[in-house]
Image: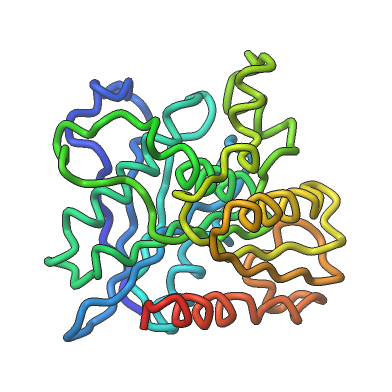
Length: 263
């Protein structure tokens, strides 16, 4: 597998509050498939509690989706000390950037999924339910930041205090906490979702996935939920672990996307 191309997210960094002397500038890692026809794409958001970005939930995930027949992108988004709305702005920009380059990269512009693990799943889910609230992008004013599908892997939906503390630098009130209980904002415009979780997850309880699925069901939005009985938090692909049975989840998600008309 060739090394991915890296692409800065923002040209005018100061307009998003990014200082020129910052050690970190958000960017996309581009894992493109050599193809003669447009393919769907998956934007991967690694987890890390909004304090870091977990390496085992990044490039290896993109490469897996390449093998399954999708273009893939890893979003290296802003985390603490940056706070909301910086990560959400980065996720929205990533979707718009992939749409903007769809012809060049041979991406089907109406088949762009965002995938996230843990807090990265919270970021993906946040874009899925709060995309109407994201400010217009002056560079791409005609391009929607709404993803066409969500893939939520042991995602924080409404219950991980550490992630919320990092996202708001400890400045949390009832209104902000409610805004990021994502299941409460699902409606008929929410993108279809594929979710998986383990019953044994002690960090982000399975109720997160169950509550989001229940809201999807109530809103009539297509979803698929896979519950694995065993496994701790943060398993990533799961290969090489004692819980290798979960490693089927990428293929299950690809089958689901195919059933949704992506192939």
